[in-house]
Amino acid sequence: MAALLWTKHAKAKMRYWSLSEARVRRVLHSPYRIEEGIAPGTVALLQVAGSKKHPYEIWVMLNERGKERKVISAWRYPARTKPGEPLPPEILREFKEALI
Image (cartoon, rainbow, N blue to C red):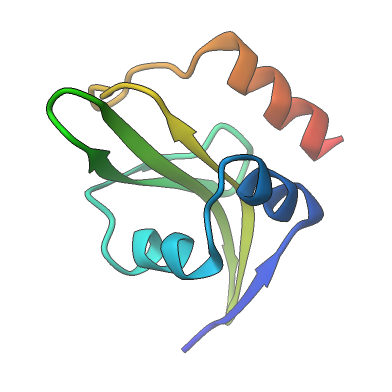
């Protein structure tokens, strides 16, 4: 199994969104959907969560190199998205800042 590393940005976002390492690992092990990440060489995985009345998604951006898996970011999206739908500008801004 690949080693799992966590960036400072990912840890900060997990605290902000109240996501535990165990919850993020569940997304990694059983994603509902996988898409190309916005950063070069990354993938974005999501799990649907919440209820019909209060739906949300948990997203994890991951970089894989050989036997190393690096969690770049994790966040809750307060709605349901469609495959290939672009991320909101505020989330894109956060990623660009984290990657600099």
